[in-house]
Length: 172
Length: 137
Image (cartoon, rainbow over all chains, first blue to last red; front, top):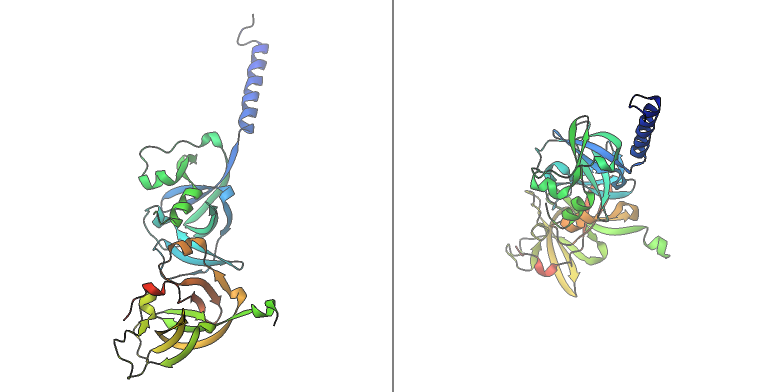
């Protein structure tokens, strides 16, 4: 019989820890684009983000909902730009110098999404996505896939299919 | 004329509705004239483009213009603001409506947008769409 402090036990413990580490490394990952809106952080699945425009001229189009900022010319194609702040019922502010437009695809629709700042592009384990808390605002919970944490701060992972699909149907 | 030559440009009649430049295919326009004193002020035969498009009409001190179009064989007269000009828009400046804009716009007959260096954004409309819903002055 071996004691916990025996070399064999230590080797076995090391090997188990190493296997756990390998399992963690092999676990399914998801790429996310993390953005700031007002004082909140949100993320989008990276597979749904086609590109990030740092500076682009937006043309206002009349006859659109207030949440639609206008259209932007992306190399010869025009796409709508939606104000996420309005959609998520966040305090409104004018786009600042760090503002960007994410060209996103969801529910078969492509559109630009105005954000205050792009913070990061990360690979996170799928297992780190936590369920949406029951205390979330209703508007957010219907659009959220879950919550992840970045630098101790909660980040709401948004569902692009729901967001753009609802928008096309006039559900805001 | 080959197909590619035929669609290199689109001839449009441009006019103003409030702050916006609006265009319709030149082939739909049969005539254009100033609105004259002989036109009754509340004529049921003249449709206000700004009302139909649900856009605010800017205060305009110039005499409005009347465009005559043909809709299902019937002549329709629209009151618009000038300047009324004829343009050949290169097809690459004409863009179909992005799906969310198409789904959410409140402008009847809005079919496409054009972006040009001279005019900026142009709303391209088809006045025959929902013509039965349009309001009269």
